[in-house]
Amino acid sequence: MIRGPTLRKDAWWAEPIPTVILLAGFVGYATWAAFQNANYFVDPYLSPLYSPCLAANCEHVTIRLFGSWWALSPALLILWIPGGFRATCYYYRKAYYRSILGAPPACAARDIRKRYTGERRFPLVLQNIHRYFFWLATPFLVFLWWDVVKAFSFPGQGFGMGLGTLILLGNAAFLSLYSFSCHSCRHVVGGHVDVFSKAPVRYRLWRTFTRLNERHGAIAWVSLVWVAWSDVYVRLVATDTIRDLRFF
Ligand code: FES
Image (cartoon, rainbow, N blue to C red; front, top):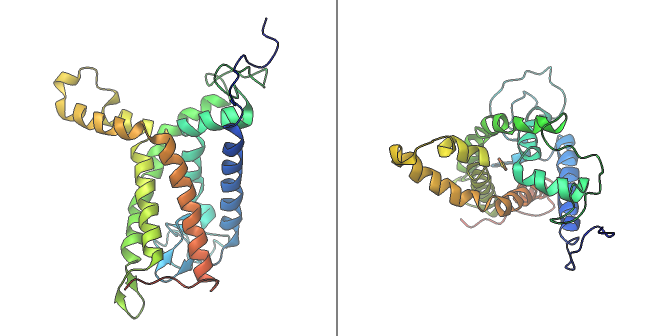
């Protein structure tokens, strides 16, 4: 009988701590920013936490789907989609099952929760909704790239580029990599093909997306931090705390 939580002698507990800090920090910051309902747009930069901006009360309307009856923050209309996509992501599931639920806290370590029943029963069976969140979240990329295009056009000056342009460009690029490295995306591309020799194009695509998929964990963290950083930058410029660095 093994009396301790594990026979491992290495620092297996070291990974869950930064995971909890990063996840809790991001969720806390994004919730705070979503309820601010201010300082998310400074021409030509729109924070990704508010994009696409769909209500009449937006500081910068992308598409006016909701009229003036919507009085709350426009971020609340959209954030449930990327939030649900992240929350049900295979990689984040591993991260928070281990770090927050302790089920298990690490490989070859005993579960902290005694009654973990896996993902075949309610409520964790609902994680299967991830494949649908992939389809809901992927169109957001079109809007984020459109925000990048607009971030090259400064009011009264025309074409230009500032640090904010580069930050929004990085945000759209990292979020695109995050979506395209998703396990559901890999499955859509070729995961359900039974005989690869009969579908050579699908097979080549599947191999490309598989290489991206192998880096999904790292991309997940970088894109998460970059989204928050993009909002912070827009917010700092919008409140005149800093000036946008203009290259030309
Ligand atoms: S598996 Fe992570 S986004 Fe789909």
